[in-house]
Each structure stands twice: as structure tokens, then as C-alpha cells.
Amino acid sequence: QVQLVESGGGLVQAGGSLSISCAASGTTANINTMGWYRQAPGKQREMVATIVTSGTITDARYAGSVKGRFTISRDAGKNTVDLQMNSLKAEDTAIYYCYLMQWSGTYWGQGTQVTVSS
Image (cartoon, rainbow, N blue to C red; front, top):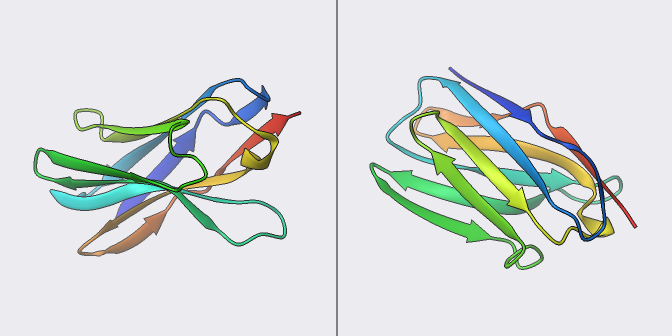
């Protein structure tokens, strides 16, 4: 019912910045949660940031490891969610997965690789 496509991953030097985006298509509800998880080899999948939408109201949440460095935002008109990542560290290297959760279920993107070189 919902398809998610990520873009913007790549290679960045430690201390640098990168922005990744997730575009949602299909039937999206007025009330939903979108955000990003990440998974590095040998590690469990970790919630990075989420943004809850209820009509015109949004609320963002961040993992402690990225709070103050990452900013999640949503463009309702484009139906996209973006993650601005600043002050990147080597430990931020992972595959970043976009997700959407709503009444019909939870949906995942294919993932985009973010690599931070030290």
C-alpha cells in the first residue's frame, strides 16, 4: 500500500554533513509516524529519529547518540521526510532505513548507505 524510496546516501568525511531523504507514495494516513533506523554490520538496528504527524501537528524524537547533530523534518506537500546529519562521526556509518507506520501497517524503504570516513 505504501512505498518508500530513500536517496542522498554517500560518503562523507568525519565532521561533515549529509542530508538523506525519503519519499512516500501510495496511501498515507493523516496520522502516522515516519523516521529513520540504521544498522551497521554486526550491530542491531537502531532508531535514529522519528517524526509523528497528526494532521498539521508534528513531533520529532531522536536517539541520544544523534540528538543535537541530526534534524528530522517533513515536507507534507512533497510527502517526504528528510534527515539532516551534521558533525558526522565514523560510528554513524550504517545503512539507513526509512520507515512509515500507520493504521495499515509498517513499511520500510530499501535502505541507503551512509559512510563516514575518519
